[in-house]
Structures are given as C-alpha cells and as structure tokens.
Image 1 (cartoon, rainbow over the protein chains, first blue to last red):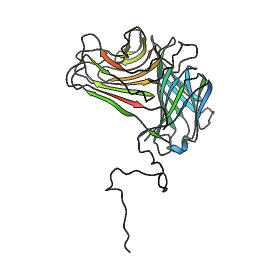
Image 2: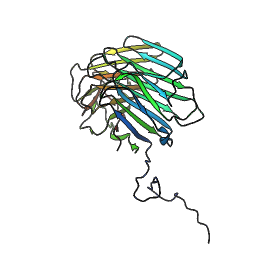
Image 3: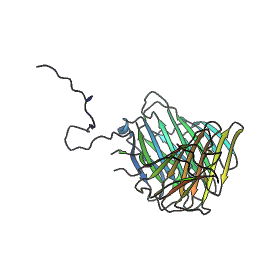
Image 4: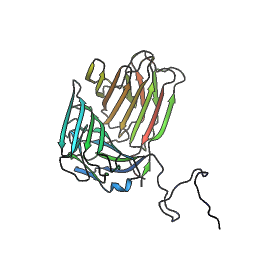
Length: 190
Length: 162
C-alpha cells in the first residue's frame, strides 16, 4: 500500500483543535489575544499572573493596566527579587522633561499609575510590552508607555531589562496598594 | 481560554477634507479602544479629542515632545491635544482610550505621535467624567481641516476572557 502524504496546503478556513476529541474548542488563531484579566474588587498590594508557560505559543506579552494606588507599576518576573533588573525612563511633568536610569534594581519599574491621594476617580494607565518573552536565550526587555493627567501629572516612556534568559513563567505587579477598580489585562501577541 | 481581540470597530478614509470626524454609538463591549489616525492637515495644527459632546472644561493633558531644538513638556487644561499635523507631511497618531466603557473612573488616554519631519510626542490626558465614552469627536485648531486621504481607524480590545 502506497504512502500518502497529507497536507493542509489546499484546505481553506481550517482550525486546529486542542486534542483529537471532537467537540473541543479550537485553539485560538488570533494574533493579539486577551489571555487573562484581573479587576480588583477590593484593594490589593500586588497582582500575580502565573503559569505563563501555558502561553508559550505566543511571541510577546503585553500588560494593559488602569491603576490607582502608587506612583509606579513595579514588576518582578519568575519570582526573582535579586538585583537583576535595569531601568530607564524618560518623563514629562507638564513643565520639564527628565530622564533617569537605575542598574542592579530589584524589580522593573514603569511610571504612570495614579497615586491614591491624587484627584478622586483618576486612574493612571500603562501599556507594557514584554518582547520575545519565551526566547530562553535572550535577556528579557520590557518597554512601556504610561501616564496620568492628575494633580501630579506624568507622561513616561520606560524600558526595563531583566538580566536573565529564562522564559517568563510568572509576573508579579506591585508598587503600593492598588485600589478597587484597578484593572490588569494580560495580552498575548504572536 | 485566549480571546482574540484588537477588533476593527470603524474605519474612515476621507474622500474630501473635513473639519472634524466623529465616531458615534461606540460598541460598549470592549475594555479599551485604540484609535489610529494617519493623516495630514491644511496647515500646522494640533489634534484634539472630545467625548460624548462634552465641550466643558473637563479635560487635562500632560505631554512631552522632542524636536530639533530639544525636549520639553507641556500641559493643557482646555482640551486634549495629541500631535501636530500639517500639509505635506504625514502624521501618525496612536491613541489608547483606556477603560473607556467603565463608569467608576475618569477616563485616561495615552497617545504616541510620530511626525517625523518635525517632532515626536507622547501624552496622557484625562476626561474628568465617569460616563462611558459613547462618542469620540476629533478636530483641529480653528480653520484647519483634515486633508483628503486621512485615515482614522478605531479598534476595540476586550478586557474579559470569553
């Protein structure tokens, strides 16, 4: 009996399934997918996304945050609290522009959250990208755009480095006490 | 379960010049909106946003810009401004309207603007209202128009996993 090579080349609009059991939901074929969201119903000191190895079919990760309770959104990857992070920022406060850098930091840092004592109902916003998050051979680079137009206004471009080549398996987001209503969404980008 | 998102909600390509463009009856099922404006204006101008027809003094903006003469930061209390557009040069503006459908917080807007012939800019703005954004109007300085061919695309990003 001859061997027939099967190919999807001539098939249009097919979808992969997570296993061979019929009726299972197809795997997402999107290029920009929401993976998880945490919206606080009570205040919290930190939010952690764990088990991120399950999303290793994505190339990049992104955090989209709407937050109040701290000046900055700090991030630790894979539980690493050692002095393995570097931070750079460029920020404007409405009257001047400044830049800063820190090496051997114990966390990544992204400016843009509204402080708890700033204007009522005002939240800061941040979009942070984790580039090549599952490489395994590159130190992890993060970049962020954050800002808040409050009594302590700030617009900031930030970058951080995690000096470790490990694939990201968890991220802890902290900085102060996030108030109820703060939202953290994790996005996967292929 | 991963939920595909970054969905195109509306798209406008101007067939004639226009003093403003309005997106109305915006779908409320998303968490964030992303607005991408790629265009030119009939003369140098800022780009402004107005929500739900609110022309009151309820907007504040902080921004920073870099250009040949150096870097600076600015604030505004009148309305949100993003980046200059001008005749003969394409300006690209990407605007994130975060938590636009929330009714428990003021609306924060992040913007990045690239106007390669003159400046690069980033800005954060706040609309001091807890109302959900249902309408976005974009306009320019008085007497300025969006030029023909300007494109404005509105995307939705969900914040709830399905």
